[in-house]
Amino acid sequence: STPSLRFKIVLLGESGVGKTSIVLRFTANRFHETMSPTIGASFLNESIQVEETEINLQIWDTAGQERYNSLTPLYYRGSHGALIVYDISDEQSFDRATYWVNQLQNQGGEKSKIMLIGNKFDLNQKNVDSKMASEYADQNGLLFRETSAKTGLGIPDVFVDLCKELKRE
Ligand code: GDP
Image 1 (tube, rainbow, N blue to C red):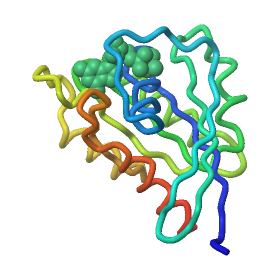
Image 2: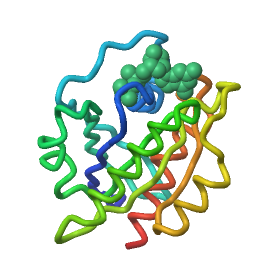
Image 3: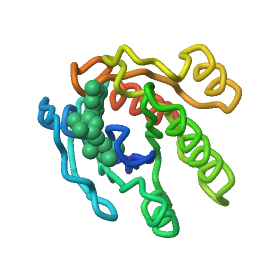
């Protein structure tokens, strides 16, 4: 029988950057122009095959609002991987992403592998420079990808690539 692994993955980032949309594109290959906001956090289970290994992903999609800040550690604690998402058209969402990077990197105990994701790459308005973001990721030991939940660009690769990285550890 094929070996199997189980990873807990958490999505973090400002409200509206497309976290739920990335999960929807990955799990159902669908996209909605209007989405109801995630309250607190939602949980999904999805299995994928990565290099002959069956991987069960427990995906935690968190609400990005500041008012849930104190709750968020409950979701990322014990996670193997974190997708920290910003919107390439929104500079402030990049700043918010760096806040989550610091939160995760400064927590005690097991560290989760972080992938920084610039989403909404389909938009013409690019207010977060790719090179700057990529350098920031390098300096902080993060994986980095740009995606569009709308067109599907880079998805499901973000999940597959993160799993490959986690398998190696
Ligand atoms: P969340 O709050 O981070 O979970 O963000 P949502 O997934 O709810 O998305 C917020 C809004 O951005 C919705 O209107 C989505 O349709 C839209 N959206 C999400 N991803 C993309 C994308 O890649 N491109 C574009 N143009 N819009 C997106």
